[in-house]
Image (cartoon, rainbow, N blue to C red; front, side, top):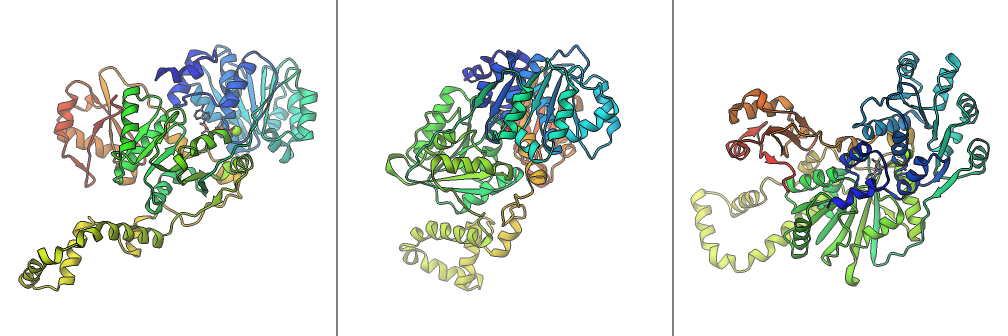
Length: 557
Ligand code: ADP
Ligand code: MG
């Protein structure tokens, strides 16, 4: 579905920027990006107002990357952010979007780290400087000329910067920059103090406001759960244990996340598939058909890919990643509760996204109740209920058909009927944990209580691991194919184990094997395209760390 790429391509950004964005897995610009990018590209000053999580970073980073001159080795853009964590997050985002722009360097300038190397990086020609105001002022005291070449300034989270008392520092920084610069200000709220800054320091700014219309949602029971980004997969798995669902759709933000989550679900035995903009139309239709007729129970989708999806069987929507705006939240959860049925919608919220939750509540006019992760007792009850439901129809007249056999076997074995029934149960449940103690042991990762969200500068604003783990794949070398196994770091796998197993069992030369990337829940290995099917067959029964490798070609479509 290449037309999705058109979303970013239509913005007239440099093709290398668009390519990096697409490689990151973004399928289309968010509303704030759609509206801000052309304005910033045209060189206007701008005030952008939008909630957290709406994609503001790319809204300024992409056009600014477009406007700098990589051949000039001097600071050209300054981005001010309120905290060290946010500054690092923005710097990382710039690096991601600039991946295909050789010569572009980014430096993050913040307190708590030595000043020398930061200043040196600026003098060495970093074009993009991302800084907290306090530390930048320290630098200005040492060298008042550091900012004289900067002609783009972005104030990110301006309201937060003022709350943290950076007003005076901002004034110092404004003075150290050319007056002809372009200034862009982003803020979730626009109090009088911010308007005053804009009045004094922005020239004829254009306003962009992502406004939320009121929407109504009926017949859908909504709840949210607070989690840290790196706990999302385990939270989803726990929730699935206790939610009584028929079919379920999960929403995530990137293509890679659809693949990762779908394979984590498959690994747990769920009938799950990914749906994203890369998936060909006929394959997409097959997935939807399978969801309709029960061959699949869970689809993990991006917003774009789920467009127009209408499957009456869907009883649940999980918003694993936050939607960009309340409208798309309403749109997403509208996938359930079809045809007058009851639906249930769950939203995972990381600490820094709580403001977005409030906006959703305001816009939908409904309270989205908080739920906790199920505890071991709830998981046990749910498992036993499922077991009861699956066994009870089997009882029937079994005693009359197999009762005598039972008598004979217990006599032959010399055990009680209870002992034999227990043995059969153990076999039938296939090692599943069915006592409290066993379940507690099985779930070390899932905390019982929500994260403490009142420390946004620490836990909340840390660049979330989910995103880093969803880094776009590096392009493959000629003649190589990328293969995937569901074994990862969490299974105790390291790259050298995979390498060893493939070398031994596959009889390949070391040079034939390319990059090996071990992620938490899966790994990727680059193998020669030539003879790949034969190799994979050869490796069919290979075990690593006691588990079946099950290597497959990655993204076969
Ligand atoms: P804000 O600054 O408005 O709070 P961010 O810029 O931090 O929001 O973006 C929030 C998340 O959304 C990030 O993880 C980012 O990678 C992701 N994101 C941003 N734009 C897009 C897009 N167009 N498609 C998919 N994901 C996006
Ligand atoms: Mg931001």
